[in-house]
Length: 236
Ligand SMILES: [Zn+2]
Image 1 (cartoon, rainbow, N blue to C red):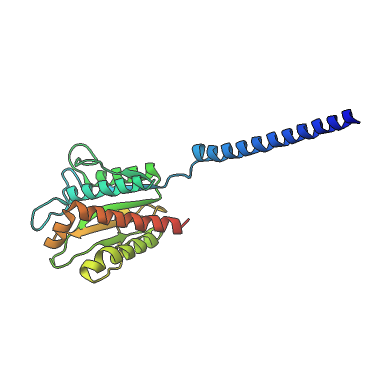
Image 2 (tube, rainbow, N blue to C red):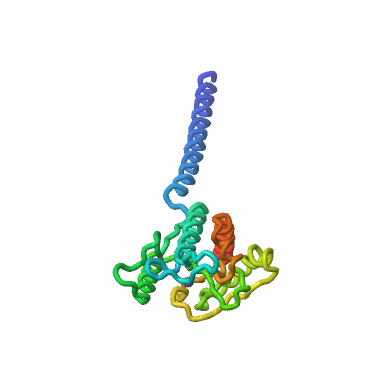
């Protein structure tokens, strides 16, 4: 009897040990499985192409007060926008990274635009943001204005313009704008939502001094990223 009881106890202990081991293995495997998923199959990164308009021999418009080139301001704004998207976990691709033109040799607008479209095609982005500066004969005109071309871009253009109205245009100008629809080559990328953001009117001295400030460019770029991120999350 004593021997039988002892054997039973040993069996119970053994079964308990096997069960405990099984639980430990299961927990370890599930934890490993979870971390393996994080390490090897992360959420695919969203890609944004940021296009700094003009460049090289094509300066774009110039500032009314300082004569600053649009191409330089576009590049500075595109750079900070890229940094913000990168730090928010996006892949950011620029159509140009320096003051040089996108094409070598004599400036050719058609080749320049084709080169930009090639960058966009290769990047297969979730959105394209083309950065430009505005100019208007009425020098009192100010504010941030969004442009778009395709139906696939309409919602993104509306959302960015609405957000920039609330954060940039209303506080300083007391007015809002609607996004402007037109035939713009850089914003015509088939199904890829693509917008042009004209960040400031270089024909207005106040807008010119604002966009010359790194703080203002950072603030504007941050608000563009917020609007794009919200749009992409909502359109999943
Ligand atoms: Zn321009």
